[in-house]
Length: 111
Image (cartoon, rainbow, N blue to C red; front, side, top):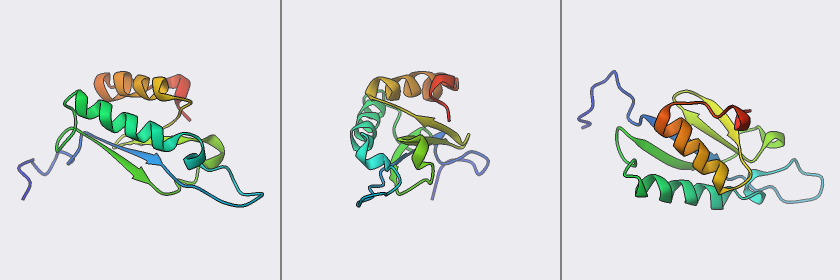
């Protein structure tokens, strides 16, 4: 049983990285082929180093296709439902530092 009150989400932020990989010619782009695994592992490690992982804090997860392939790679932060794209781990750090720590939307990465 959770020790959190029912009016609070289980995680303050639940972050999903699309990890989908499509094979074959003519397929839509896929996040898994554009650094998603590296980005997700980096985020998970950084959140743990900051002591932000766990119940009531931040959860970093993998997901299948989030259906925004042409805008990818993509990550979505809940409960806000803020969608981002990124190029490298410095973009992920900016999302962590500004959105997850300070509650600021990173407009330059938002999709």
